[in-house]
Structure formats: C-alpha cells, structure tokens
Image (cartoon, rainbow, N blue to C red; front, top):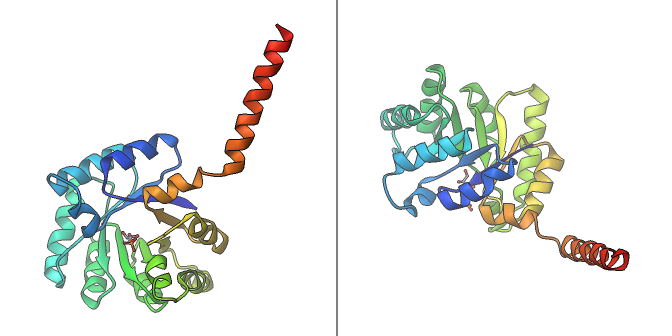
Amino acid sequence: MKLFIDSGNLKEIEALVPLGIIDGITTNPSLLAKEPGDYRELLKRICDIVQGPTSAEVVATDVDGMLREGRELAKIDKHIVVKVPFTKAGVQACKTLTSEGHRVNVTLVFSATPALPAHKVRATYVSPFVGRLDDIATSGMNLISDIVQIFDNYDFTTEILVASTRGPIHIVDAARMGADICTCPASVIEAMFKHPLTDIGLERFLKDWEKAQTVKA
Ligand code: E4P
C-alpha cells in the first residue's frame, strides 16, 4: 500500500519525505488556504520535493470551470493529479480530463455508489473519507471494505485512496482491507513511529552495550 501525506505544509513534507516511505501528497482547498504565498508556487515546490503524485483540487463547481482550473493545475508540474469532487459536474469533468491524458482524483466520497461512475470516467483515484464518517458515528472502514470488494469483483483499475485518516489504526485497517493508498496528516505518520516498548527497548540495548564496554575496558 502506498503512503501519501495529506498536507500542503512544506515543513511537514520536507521532514517526512527523506524517510523514504512517502509515495505522494494530497492537498485540498482547506489545507492550501492555511499556507502563505501563491498556491501554484507551493504546489510546484511540493512536486519537486516529493517527485510523486500530488493532488490539487479545483474550486469551481461547474464543468467548464473545473476543466479550466484542472488544465491550469496540470500545467504546474507533471506530478499534479487534478482533484474533483464527486458531483455530476465533477464526474463529467473527470471524463474529459482523463481523455486528455490528465490524472484525476475523485474526492469527497462518502458511500460506495461512486465506485462505478469513477471507474467509468477512468478516474486514477477515488478518495473515500473515513474520519469524517467516523465523526458521525458511521464506520468509515466499512466503506473501504465495500469499495475494495466492488473493485475486486470487476478488476477496476481506479485506485482506492483512503482519506480523512485520524490515526495509525486507519493505516493498518486500510492495508488489511487491501486499499491501494492511505493518505495521512503528518501527525498520523509521526504517530506510527511512537511505541513505548521501542523506546524502552532501545534504551535498554544502549545501556547494556555501554555497561559491557566499561567492563571490557
Ligand atoms: C483527502 O484528500 C483530503 O484532503 C483529506 O484526507 C480530508 O481529511 P479531513 O477530514 O481530516 O479534513
């Protein structure tokens, strides 16, 4: 399973990419709105750092506007993936953009019904939001399981990108269910590296090593 960072923050991205475990980035208008400067320059810098798929979302809600914005976003860098919401306009724009050779991420997916339309318009990714479903007492992970089953039934090539993750358990569940990608805020990726037994174990190894060196000396 590929791991993406869900962020538009350069510091977060620069800190995690050198680990060698990051395959791409997802952004959205809320994330980019928090960052200073021109969003196009920011997206370009992100693409240069990550050298992998970087989703950038349109803000137009009509087909023509989405196409105009999508084509402009795609010009920023070869790694840009145009993100469109799962609306009728978004699906129609996806069909045109993919037929022009652009990659498209269909986002804001909260049920399994978008699976078929997303595949038909050749979406590169479909992004179900697990955390926002959990927030309203509905299992986000059940949705992933349903979509994985539907895609497997028909060998759909659209990749399932698990979004709106809230903790490392979402990464484990997404991988267990066979999702293609999990995108996480930097804090969730940082949390993967936190286990008290690792810290205690490392401390003990180092102490034992140090003690042995003193005895041998
Ligand atoms: C995904 O592409 C979205 O940017 C993101 O995962 C939304 O997450 P949120 O529900 O934490 O805002």
